[in-house]
Length: 521
Image 1 (cartoon, rainbow, N blue to C red):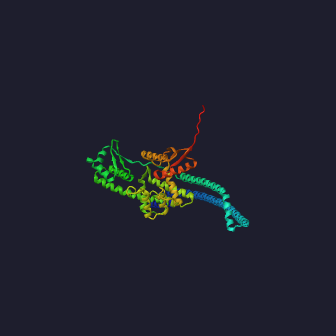
Image 2 (image 1 turned 135 degrees about the horizontal axis):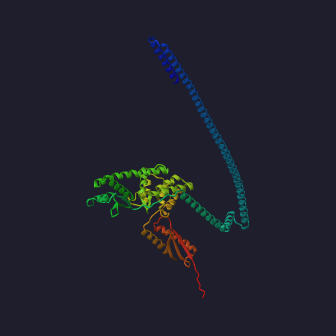
Image 3 (image 1 turned 90 degrees about the vertical axis):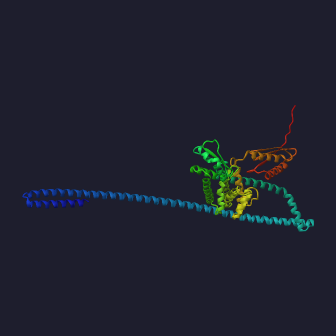
């Protein structure tokens, strides 16, 4: 840019010189103008030289600044490279240490396995030697008996074995009892561990389902419009949707009541849309109800597909997925059926994982064990038969069908996965607060349990306690001994299973005691 300025200055000077030469031709003071022009040109030239010098200095400063930035960037790049090299070296050293540790551990385990293998071979040889020695002793005893008693070898063998059996009967019974006790203790510990781990890893929330839904109104004038002329709107609503609409003195609210959660949800959504729309009349009611019904049908299928995908249990028939989504609108004793189903599925998978079974199959069986509840409002029959028939129709696994039957005692348990589903179902249903029962049915069940226990001979009193989950039976000690009390508890438990419907389990506790009373006078 400075070179351009200098060129412009020189051009200006040249123009001035030409101008003054032309003036000289017509002016006698040409020399004066020439001197002035020369002076002016010299000043401009000096200024141009000065600008050129400044430009060179500025260029050098820029070049030095650029060099400085370059050096700084170069230093940073080198530092970053060194840091990365150090990281790589550190990771390589860490990997080498880990590899050495793993190699050492593997070598140690290999040596341990080899030592155990050698011990096993030694024990096998010792066992074979003892077995041979035992057989020789038996043969010697048989020959001795044969010669002394005049019996054949087979007869002597039978006599000897009977004597050994009689002598060892007590020892065998003691060993059997000991191992039975140990097996029961170990089984109980293992079962408690599996249940504790499963329930601690999955602790789902629960909330009781209600029988009514509240619809908010902006003002009480809408109540008259919902009722309609001569009640035609509310009649159309209740007839079409199959629910009861309660309009009372509650300010800015109406209630939708129904035992069918699915109908109640559709009715609530329809009412809200009608209130927003403002056009409340029979034709509009039918139109909006039809649209809401279609939305709910699509929604339950979408929810079922999402649940199956999240559970990672494989491919499932669309009709089954739709019914799984519909479980959201079913309840048992106030417990939401979908929440219960998901809880059973997760618990089953966790327990089977601890026991070494098929986790995906257990979760699938848990998810489908109550699928029949989606059909109980539209079809006759109990949910167990409905669910089993439905799953058989869509070629579900035999374990799934067995779980559907077995969780209500209709079949015996045939697999680990089925046992886990039954245990998870009892856990989910029996925990306090999970289910709400009507007081009348609860009192009826408790009374029936007490009556069953009281009908047996030798029973003095029977009390149902712990919310009907335990019955304490007081027996006459003179009529019932200890062994009979064990049999009595089993008989009462079996009769309760056959005659009473209840969630979870009921503990039968038979108490026998004798008292000797004397008075000091």
